[in-house]
Image (cartoon, rainbow, N blue to C red; front, top):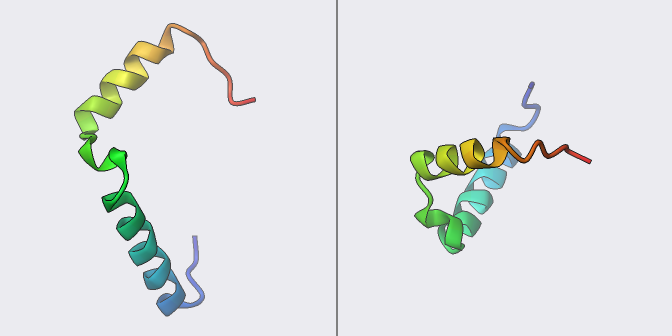
Length: 48
C-alpha cells in the first residue's frame, strides 16, 4: 500500500492507537487473540 500523505497516515495511526488504548481490547494479548481464533475455527464461520 502506497502512502501518499505521510502526515495523514501518522495522524490516522495516532487516532487509532489513542482509541484502542481507551477500549477493552487494550487488555488483549496476541496469545488471547490466537486462542480465540483457534476456538472459533471449529464453527466454520464465513465473512458474510
